[in-house]
Length: 143
Length: 387
Image 1: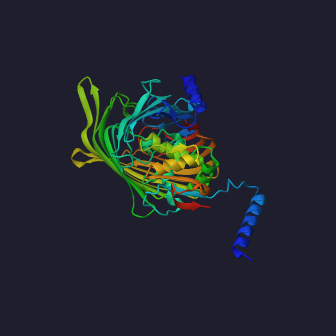
Image 2: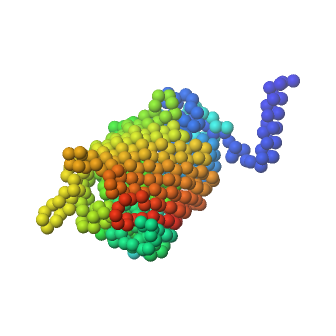
Image 3: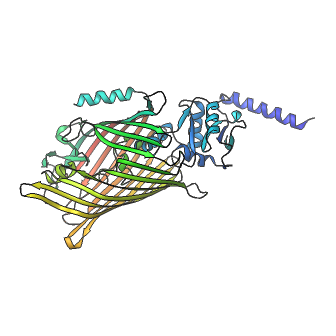
């Protein structure tokens, strides 16, 4: 018996069972990939380090955001930024109204986020892990 | 006047969330903020007595909640929404990825001598050598980034209280015209990011509200010249620390029939501030220690003011309750001093909008021979947001 195949089928069965029990859609539980431009020297970073760029704490990378209201953004906010959307908005309000910077630009889809990251060496963004391709480099996975 | 401001606030509330693009290419953006604040002095006393007294133009029991514009609540007025309410508009034009111009105007319900005329709080050019440069240079007019909340004192949505502790925040001069430079960097391979910021400039305010309305009664003018200041701030996502030092020459004077009378003339003054904050899991800790010094033994000047603030809050879903303590004191007799405790609750009930309720218990520790602002208990409610 091919043990690898058995293992894969069992894993799939477990995953489907978990999804059915949890009532969660597979999309909402998508793994996130934090991505940068392939030309950027960065290789790996902790999600907490990436969070700083999305909260204006550090300008080493230029953050690109998903659309407001997108489930992916809500997941990123909760798992990586570990803040409520209100807290994030309060942080950016301080920055915008004291001339220290501007809020990250928003893109309507992961395809657009990938393009924005591919176009800018210092950009950092996040997409579903399944959307990763060779136009971008992954620096962290958020389960 | 009150109705117009409420109408404007409601219009802002109904407006779109986030920046509004005024042109198709996205280079001209309009953003804004508003505070719709009401408060009521519940009780107060001075020099041990609760019998009403007058301080300057105000009928007390009373409390000053903003020193720059002399926003004072009087118990005899009941609920007042006309002291701190405001709406601000910011327009930003990007000429290129490295050059932009920004202006911020604020319409205030209470602006002595100016009615509802908007004040130009900020107007500046921003330039970076390259789009992602660590350096940023600006020239124009700015609020002075003195203490932690100084430059965003009026952006209520950005902090937990109805307003930052009036014991600590409030000066006769709060803006400068000049230039500044920032350098931002990651500290090695660590999680710490640091900002080094320096500014230089000056500002003159004729008949400034703080001096004229709160202390001297007769029109008083103040000028802070040769302002040179800097701060270093560092954060790692959990801890956020800041140290600031500013030096300037202070001139405070009145024009009398006999000519100009200067209280101080080009007097060297120094202000220093330290701030340490924590934002970890659901906990918030805010603290600061600040000091003002205008000392000149030869002129018999020993103006030293000391300030402190500490607050602890907890963020639970959309709610942020917080307890804060603040105090300030001068060192020369007759001492002017105050302690205040604040219990505040912030509710982020809707996107870009927060409702806050706050109860302040303040004790006047001054040694003046006359009743000053005195002790007070204040209840404040405020709807604050951004658009």
